Length: 112
Image 1 (cartoon, helix red, strand yellow):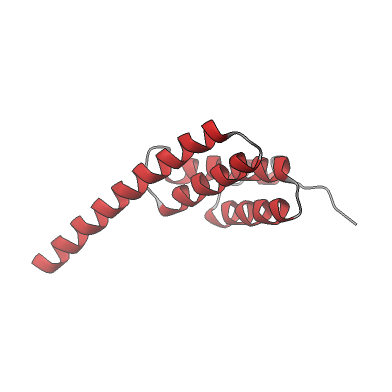
Image 2: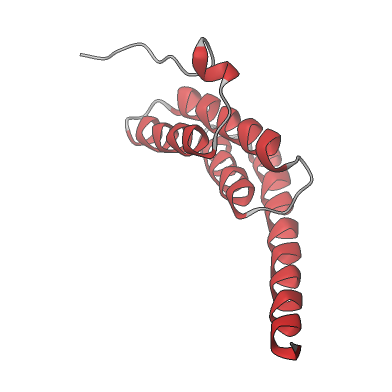
């Protein structure tokens, strides 16, 4: 017996926390495994939007990379390869920025 999802409406829409974004991500994974690809995509989009609100749309953050990757997987499963590729490119660029930031931080720590 299924239950209706509250995601995207009610208190979830107004609440923005890393934990809610992670729960949306987990729900999308479950939905994808159950073959509900369109609903999974919707949850992935909500998780990405929430993480972008939390950390900044252009901010390089590992959680945003995860959401970009997961949404790309879902879009690919739905046959939207062009949009999936765009998201993969965004995720790759963000990973490169994160790696550069990490290397820079390590260098400063070693120099201290």
